[in-house]
Image (cartoon, rainbow, N blue to C red; front, top):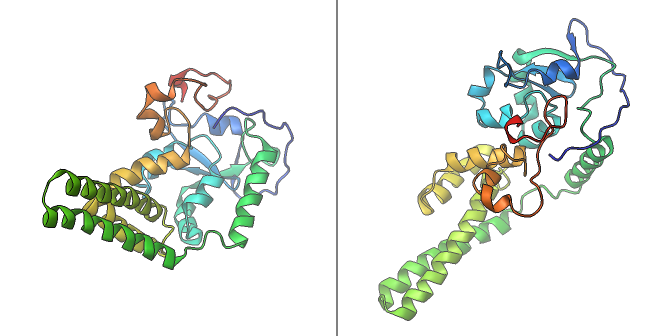
Length: 266
């Protein structure tokens, strides 16, 4: 995220009994880059130690590590459908919470922007815009299967002369592009309500039909959505450093304490 001017306003919050209290300065120091290599993050003002758990994190170690020393509330909400189940695993990682005089997020984040984002997400959910349309996805699936079959049948029936080959190539290219976007929605668990069905069909589409590993794509794409357009954290930028280094400066995160923009700070 780009550096933002945060509010100095302090938010008074109730304190849970028997929980250790932390400041943002303490949390930022546990970002995985110090001598201890410990990784702490904040979700709904609760502080969690994910140092060991990050290696067993189902979404990949880098996704959760990118939020070490930061507030991960919005990322947690976005990435986990069954939050009740996930919170059971969080209990063993809980080490404390933010002190009452500490704001709910880092000072470099803009409060009004976060509030607007959360209100927008709530509105979208209430409108039902996140509910999948099964007829639409079925037609998309049927669409690229027919095109893929047509590409091979065209070459098989008409031979490999220029026109049949060109027609088959057009069919095949369109089918591959549609497969890529369809598996993208499956990777986001946006097609079926249960994640396992999304994962199974994604394996069929990207592994079998496209010849790419679903695990590789998910590993990179999860990081992209965890830290979109953040250099050194978004793999989409890391894959094309020369291309994205042209024009305007890259979006980066401020380093711990001071807004240094040295690339190795992130």
